Image 1 (cartoon, helix red, strand yellow):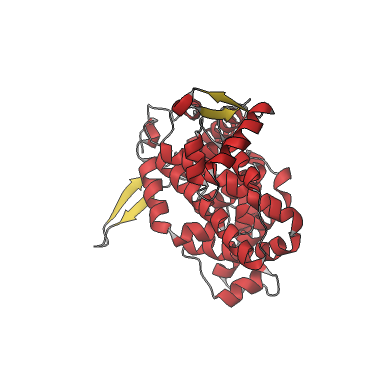
Image 2 (cartoon, rainbow, N blue to C red):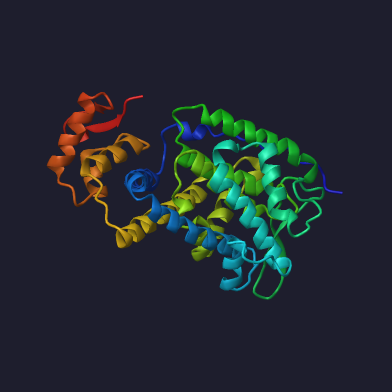
Length: 356
């Protein structure tokens, strides 16, 4: 019998409010906000294009999220299952159909879903019940471990998730910690969401389906916070394309998790890179389908307002090399005058920050 651990895992995201953030996260976050603005402008005018992109992305998401777990079938069968032109013919296809159903609920009704026990269990039940999984919609009832298989076939325990007896309490604490962090205006949601997803993966609350659930919950939280690129460019496909980097980041950030000593930043970096690639791909695909110029002013405004820390004119120019320093300076001046942002420092040390 495994001895109960003396150290209790705590969920505390207040470190995101201390201003000590790696420089690479600051740059990529600003770029995501800027690209989101461009996508928003286009979506208002070209709804049909986005509807077509969504249909393609849905098939890719269902395919990729299952493929990561080794659940595969032909591209033709996946398209038929996603489009409901055929019923699943075997266990793998039933698993694929379950993911389709859960993904559809998030796409069409994310506003009515929350990061809480009821909705998380409901999504798991929807995802797993098509394949006849006995414990669909229930937390695990036996302890699980995450194994690593060496090239010679030797297995070892890479990570021990939260014991089954403590899972319900851990999920309750995770839910409350997320709600508490959401109420803190100084914590950026783009940094918070991957922390919550990492903690979910480390709890590993279900007997099966944890990886797929983590991707569904990633989309849910991103959509609820206005970052919906994953609807039009498959977030799951981007993970699958760079699977080795994803698992490396997960391993780095889960080390020391049980003793509250883990480092969230590798996983945050990987998560934001995945989202950034979705927005970049959306930008590229839309340009091919239909060019829509987003104003330089809108791009500069999004970059400043989305920055996690005070940002300089030079940093803005580096993000937008096609925009002249004169234009950047002009827009910053108007934003200061309008009260959107405030200027701190002087001369070369001048920075701009959102006016809360």
